[in-house]
Image (tube, rainbow, N blue to C red; front, side):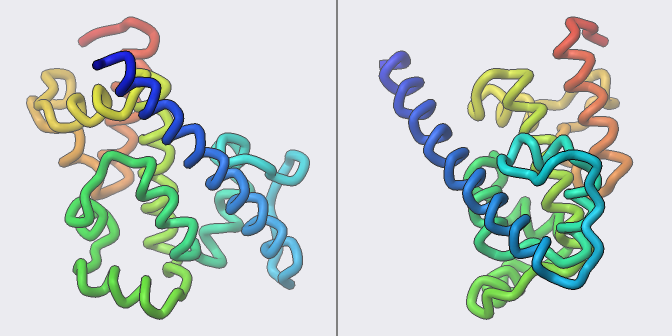
Length: 176
């Protein structure tokens, strides 16, 4: 059963990653057509993983705002509930629904938070290998983080940095 579930899960995330790649490519192309300055030192961004490594592309997208369509795809790959997202974005769940209905891009501050959670999710998936293990780690108080659940630290940039730092240490086998 576990092997079958892992294969289904892997297929689901591979499909989702393809959708993310497509949306990032389209978003980045739309961004290039605007009159706004695009900061990037690399070639045009074509995939989600390339995007997360290109701070200039991230900064450019944050300035124009993440579309609700891109947010929806990111939301599907991240192990966070609607309530978690509302807390991180400092919005009510009702406001999130309005963004969805109006299909308007998020403001810069919310776009930045979405990208931060994307970075944490990518690092968590790289570290733990699957979303279930990563989610379990997020929900478990961690001694290295002051016996706080890592998910509770993600509401601000400093907390996100602490979580990313701990994920990096785990990746390198440095357990606190």
